[in-house]
Image (cartoon, rainbow, N blue to C red; front, side, top):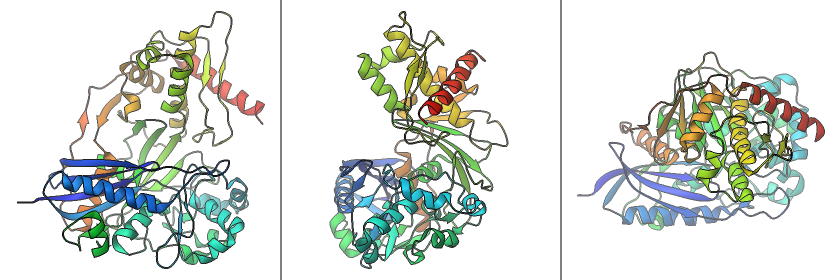
Length: 480
């Protein structure tokens, strides 16, 4: 007999993951396919969406070929902030513009000129890679493509259109566009008009777990499903889908994910907007029409900075982390190698080692680098809105697997860390939204948790952290 399962598809920036989730929450099979991000000019980041569809179809076919499955619900999630401009038939009028794209710096000025209450309602930093500024760039620089467009979709929404033939988005992606009134929980139509965009391009908004449509016969054929008509959920942004899967819901909770970058997430009961926030506030993914939010601080330079240091100094990963075990030294590392988001929000910021002398050796530079990444994470954490200190912080992501780095993070944050793992959390969250769209019970997904990492040396890094904060301020002044 075929195994009933849910299909979850996670559309990332450089690759897509598909998985089959059993109705009891166990992952049956998964597959990954990659595609390129094209850089046609300075600061550009684009992908032809047809490559997403080809990769998705290949990944799903591999998953389905691994067993005998009966797909009863489908969900999608994807990279946030980007935009796919489509004509009325869902055909992209140009390549998708992605979140790392920084070409819309001049267009962001339109948002800075908004009245303070309008900026506060957006409740998010003004970032060039969000859909609103990217759309305005197309309107100004590619007016013919803009005129042909009939709808502006997030990446996962375009992928879901290929599955169902239905245009829509969900609040988690809509709230990350700089075109959403976060406290009002609706499109910020006054802002859309003020910056000069066409509000007719904005799709209908439905709950993440709502039924978007059924799988079409054409899509089923390309995915090699014997039948079509399966319910497909509206879906969610990738971070929202992962948080949905891990069950992070209480405002007293906090989660830190460390990979190439780092994300710190805290749930919110109600959002409050300020005109110049240093962190993000987005709608959470929900299986129904209820409203929840989460605050997120995004650190761009975590594993990506440490990998650069490791390569520069010619060290293995274990040696890099071992260099930090001795404790704080006199050298400070600011890891802004790719600019930085929370809390400085400056894409042109640069990194540096400071305080070097003739006695500075390779181990000192390596240890300072590991400390610098931990300090950058604390700097971002302190910018998050918080009514209470969490009892512990969930630690996820492969970048937090080193015991030395875990202990250092706990000491720097002054908080216990609970290592937590959920295989392919975003794709699992997407599949769980597929269950909601199909009217099925939510799968009982199990988190794998490790031993609590307690701060062992309270205050040990306080002086070094303050020196780091001072170094960040001095560098920003020097860089103008």
